[in-house]
Amino acid sequence: MTFDLEYLNLGRLDQLSYRESPVHDLDPRVKVLATALFVLTVISFPKYEIIELVPFFLFPVLLITLGDIPVGFILKKVLVVSPFAVFVGLFNPVFDTRTAVVLFGIAVSGGWISFLSILLKYVLTISAALILIATTSFPGVCQALRRLGAPALFISQLLFLYRYLFVLMEEAMRIVRARDLRSFGKRGREAKVVVRIIGTLFLRTVERAERIYRCMLSRGFRGDIPVLRRYGIRAGDLLFLVLVVASLAAFRFFHLTELTGRFVQELVQ
Amino acid sequence: MHMADALLSPAVGSAFWAGSIAAIGYASRKVKEAVDDKMIPLMGVLGAFIFASQMINFTIPGTGSSGHLGGGMILSILLGPFAAVLVMASVLTVQAFFFADGGLLALGCNIWNLGIYPCFIAFPLVYKPLAGDGKNPKKILIASLVSAVVGLQMGAFSVVLQTLLSGKSELPFGTFALLMQPIHLGIGIVEGFVTAGVISYVRSVRPELLENVTRSRPLGAEVSVKKVVITFAVLAVITGGALSWFASTRPDGLEWSMEKVFGRPELPEQEQGIAPALKGVQEKTAILPDYNFKRPEGDTKYEAEMPCWPNVEKATSVSGIVGAVSVFSLVVLVGFFVRAIRRRHA
Image 1: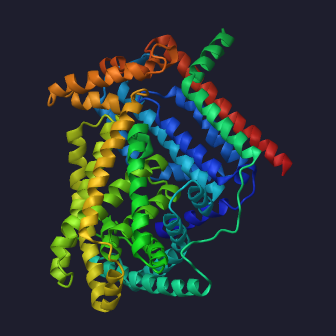
Image 2 (image 1 turned 135 degrees about the vertical axis):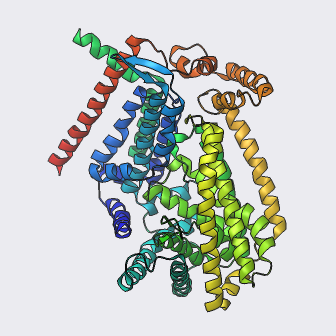
Image 3 (image 1 turned 30 degrees about the horizontal axis):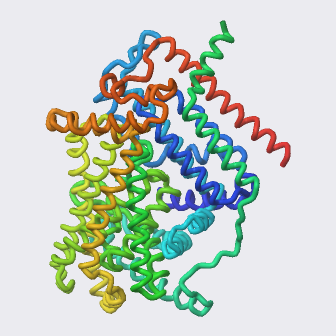
């Protein structure tokens, strides 16, 4: 069932973030900032841009290899999820049929070019988010956001949600299994039954929250979640940030791909 | 329903991020003022509950397709709008990171579409007046249905607007709206039924629970919610306006699409009004207006009249493709190289 698969996927991404590598060692704040800048730069390209987006693949490739993250796992996640961008982008070839360029005798319409551009941007931005989590861990990102000025209440909210996500998913999984064992075919999937199931899950959730609160009070909870791990910005972190900003600017403002293409053509001739 | 990074322009994405950050900051302050620590774990765990409940699919009667609980409405009813916005924002954040729903820049838009509309508009302006004291199951059903539909319709329309303003998609406004609105009408009705069902079920089994939850929030005070709505509207206009000015130095987004949107025959007078004004701003603010590398995206006139691939000379596009292939191979090679080195070290 997709349910179990999604749950395992969630855990896998979390586990990856506990590895040790130069990328994992970087300060979370630096990584969050770098990722944000990366996404903004990629998105800032105009709609008909394809070739100048190619150099940007250097970032995910370097982070994945330096961070010891399985390529297949990230690729699978990128390809499987969220068809919305692809779905909307598919209309571009339908509505924009003007020939933009003729390649080897085939007329390519502007719509296909902008669709391909959307696809490239989609792969780049989504993999950036996945890589950030896989090398930083969700609590790490939360701490970074906190240090960058996000409200404390919102951050503890995020941390709670993350912590109990796994617990409640297992609870829901048990309920779904119990239902599946007791019903055949489509029975047990009617809205009426499901509403009751969700209601039960809700009651269990609230009761659990009350227990959690009492436990936390007895352990000295005062409305804030303290962190054990201390981060500090070191020279290496600054160097990483400077390198990222410099190369993003270079990739954005110079036509690197075209220059490379001319260079290669001249080499061949 | 989730807006995606690839469809956004930086100006639109940042504008909605600014709005959502303001909303989160304001809601955090409100919740902290009015609520005891007890709410913090409750909110967090309820966010996890929204996730878990989305895993329980059910068949929609008569269609055979499956639906699930969206969350914004039920959270507003249970926790009040301010806490609900925070929970929705955190749910969407986790979705953006782990399920790659949308992406990081689009997260601002998603919080706006799926959090702020249901919690700050549909709940106080639709649900509360319709539900009354919240004791009559029929009233709850009608109120949940209408408010869930209203919230989702606004969210869906906002996705259409964001996509249009970003100018990455070719979908005409009418077609896109006609695609999005009916789909989300169905989703809204399902969400309304499930919301009402869960609320009524909880009320019948453990009524004191609902009372407790509702009593621990003197937050829903209408006056302040109205103030919030107005503040956000003003904020959105200001940030959108400021960013579009700023963005006009990098024009592919807002300005270009404004020309496209308002340049349509329905609003001919706008074309004369807005586009030249923006062009003027752009000419004044462009850092190096005639510098070569900016020309393809820097010249609006070029974009507007001939929306083609930059420099449609054959030689250029061939060298572009050769370059793309070589750069891509180079990137892959770098990857293998780094991996090999790391293997040897390990």
